[in-house]
Length: 263
Picture 1: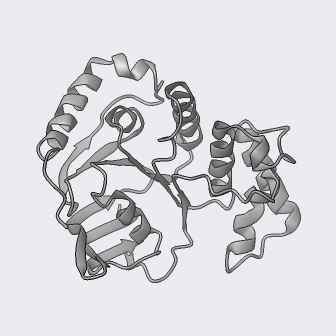
Picture 2 (picture 1 turned 180 degrees about the vertical axis):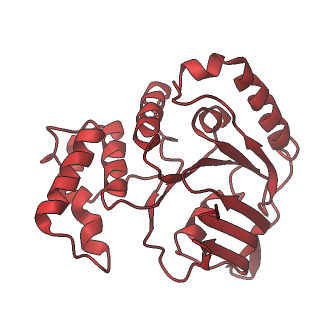
């Protein structure tokens, strides 16, 4: 089976005034359809840049990013993007925020009744039933994250991109939302690329983990996580194999933890 996504010798340079910032260098990887891939690495290593390239929000300086075997040109409408901030529109209710992707998509021929039914199913799936008419300011941080996830899934994307979605939450809420994410993803057939700083989170969720180096971001290691599914995100941490994966990935991260960024 051909991969759904390919990064072929991708490099990316940004300019800040006269300064060249090398975000990525010679990144080559594949993402299989239906897998959950986690990307970990130090701050500034290009993790978010990889997601932006996948979403078609920017182009690689060198190399290519392929979706379904074809280079991504312009915004990739087959992916959905959950950013670090929930970015819900404060003047719209939960239901109206979740319906927003239908309004923004270029080819929106979905009847309104079907849109609302899809929104209803997503709201129920993420545990927000009864809060449809609430505004973001009336929700807790965890509830806003759930609404953001529902909005990302409502138009049935093939690939879900998540950029440290739980990074600002407390440990208990993170565990709860990790469990809900796995419950939503497992059996869906969706491909999920999850960026995180947290090795424990990456191992708990992923089929494979990519470790990035310090900037310019290069792939330091790729580790297959052969832990049984469905997973209990709390209990899985006591599996003896979990510790082995943690040690292996930590060793890869530690290789250049103290290197300065290449700016």
